[in-house]
Image (cartoon, rainbow, N blue to C red; front, side, top):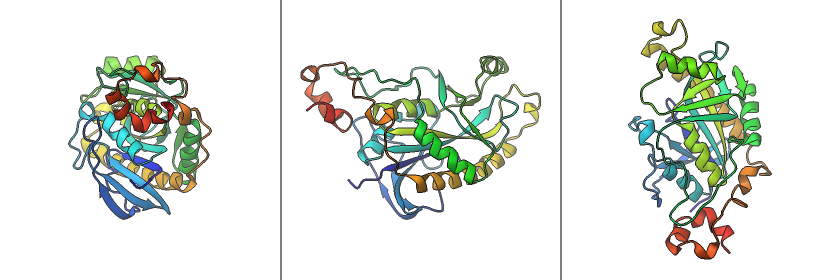
Length: 287
């Protein structure tokens, strides 16, 4: 397969980036099932990238229905080393306003039963995940956001909830009391799997509205959220393009060697079928 070292996962409003040229679609099958759709291999600011619509064309997959393992494994098969992930979020802070951009550094898991690892089936690995976002890639994204003129917030915690319903007021106030900053439904599993695949990962969180804790939340309409989403998507496209211009960078981060000391199972004890299934991820550690 051709190598596309930069991957882009687009959420709502990012299904068609106009700057992507020389496009071709690549359908990829993985040992973990089918990704959300075909990968669009294209040129962006002189770099070859692989773009995936997270929820499929027409936004037809719930967050709970996403095959996160297949999505990230497909990027690995394409040779991706950096993933830029853009998604809509709600704000848990007064100063994180609609249309602001957040590059979070932490996640908090409120999902239920989602499969978040490639391992099992006879092989055990425990990757370090204290710092779930690649710091070097986060720097690149934040720099691109500043150059694009975004109202940027660097750092903070993204609460990943199950959905598809939004929070109750009690839940929203609980998250605020815990000191969390934004809330969404998709990015935590992507970050976990990217780390296991030794891919650098960063989130571009697009604030569309205040969560339901806000006293003016009841005046928010679907039309307002969609309008903010589309305006945010335009900014996100500029940020992604600017970040792509700065890549590749030297991968001196922990992401690039996350599995070096993480695999607990002795190579001779790993079943042959499991070795073959995970060869793109663990192959270099089995020789």
